[in-house]
Amino acid sequence: MNLEQIYKSKVVTAAQAVGKIKSGNRIVAGHACGEPTEVIAAMVANCEAYENVEIVHMVAMSSSEYAKPGMEVHFRHNSLFVGGNTREAVSSGRADFTPCYFSEVPSLFKGNLPVDVALIQVSTPDEHGYCSFGVSNDYTKPAAECAKLVIAEVNNRMPRTMGDSFIHVSEIDYIVEVSHQIIELQPPKIGDVEKAIGQHCASLIEDGSTLQLGIGAIPDAVLLFLRDKKDLGIHSEMISDGVVELVEAGVVTNKAKTIHPGKIVVTFLMGTQRLYDFVNNNPMVEMYPVDYVNDPTVIMKNSKMISINSCVQVDLMGQVASESVGLKQISGVGGQVDFVRGSNMCEDGKSIMAMASTAAKGTISKIVPLLAEGSAVTTGRNDVNYVVTEYGIAQLKGKSLKDRARALINIAHPNFKNELIREFQKRFSCEF
Image 1 (cartoon, rainbow, N blue to C red):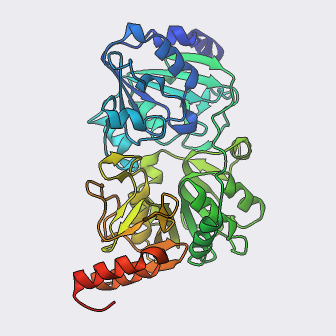
Image 2: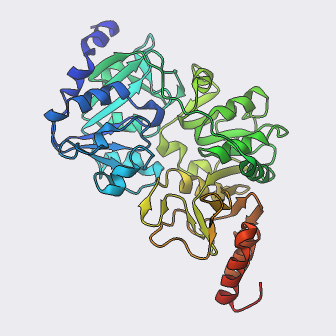
Image 3: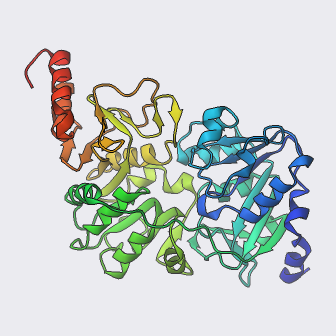
């Protein structure tokens, strides 16, 4: 058969495709904005046909109906990164959470979590029969390579991204043709606090630096203060719309990068249609699986590598909690530790933890004597370098516990400084 015949022989309806799923299967669903929403909706509609189907997913952007009350007999969600749509299911015990570094997820699919079915979303094939994973390469491509059965939504609105981002139609078992808008993530609101944090972070970024930026208002605020920089590069887990503006302004050129010069390297994308249009067939943007992009030994090869990540709490020793509040799991480690370590291993690199000094409308300090009881330590004190709030920059690496505590108290919110100073004096038996 020629390519057209091979392709047509695999085309089925979403209902027909999910009919191939069997009770007891482990399913890996495509990540974040690359989630195959129509196939997942068909699977949920067919729930009575299944028992004990495990659904492995990181950031779920759709409504995650498989994790709703009443679905327990049919589906068990195993979250590798708890998002807003699955948080309640995990906290109530209807779903599980499996801790892991993002970079190690593909290895789990080859070992501890073997994949029965991969549900993916890809672009339409090119003249050679290759479909692009588009906005979600990360663990989605490795899952498809490991799966016994691959069901793909082929979406003619999925951007075609370059790099190691392709699957041939011959490697897909069933194709469901769709035409729908890719899930969008709208830009967050950036307030005065975020702007102050962004300005502090930007002061640590030199011309020719390579950046990793997380998700949210703080990383986006950093981008606002980089317009006077020259020849910045991107090697990041993900990017959003703000990077497009810096490319168009001539700030991000990737010319100074030591690996993949001239290229933005990422593993997934979350943004609006503006971002998706920018990356479509754009040779400047290359996407690779997460076990490459997030590998600290790869990250460290970038000169002046700078990672910027957010967190929930920092204690006076410099321990960082980013994924839980006490025993309540609110997210996951994601790529934070991967990039912190990669940046630290870079000879001229910097890792930055950036956060507002308070939470709950200013009633709670995020710099604390001790992390909340039960909180997971996401980034250990030995790995933390810079901590930034709207009140300034604390550089911790190479400092004693006493000096770390002083530096952190100096960037805490004024309303909580006296309380933290009393804890300092009690702990270290000396004046602040």
